[in-house]
Figure 1 (spheres, rainbow, N blue to C red):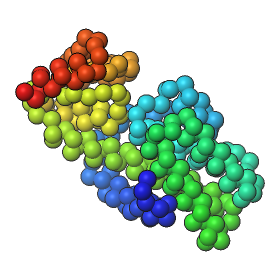
Figure 2 (figure 1 turned 90 degrees about the horizontal axis):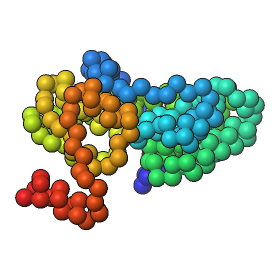
Figure 3 (figure 1 turned 90 degrees about the vertical axis):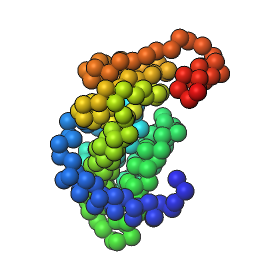
Figure 4 (figure 1 turned 60 degrees about the vertical axis):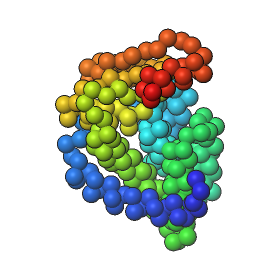
Length: 231
């Protein structure tokens, strides 16, 4: 993240305004959402990430938001110091579990921004918790709205009969594939990374054929793909 926390916090409020409009314009796309885990507590979020049950960049960001939200709603954080310490503890644990996941970092920045804004405005402890919870709700809804918009626009890039090269799991990309199939487009997926069971199952539901290349070294695979698709 290259911007300051203050600038990012301003931008997330702006993103929320745009996401509401996007949701109103794309209500028919709700069924494309990949269902998130129903988290029961902040510790449950950490456990599910540790056990690798959270999959995809967007779900990771939403999971982090749920951790801060549930901590504020459920835990006995009876002082500003206790609240700040718990938020820092959650941030440290989330970043330790997924140090390269930008969406977790973003959620941490936004949640912390809500805390700082509330303190600077002279809010009470209860009001501060409420502002953090509201910020986390905006993060989650904005994430869904962004995936919906990506599905709509990304599906327009898939042409009839094309082959899509991809790697690893992405709920946003699955939303794009779902939208493309709902547009009546036929395409196939050239998957050259190990696919989790849920991912492969989704392709079967969409009736999208998957092509698995034989195991080989990375250089040979790159040359094979270049020759197949770009020469």
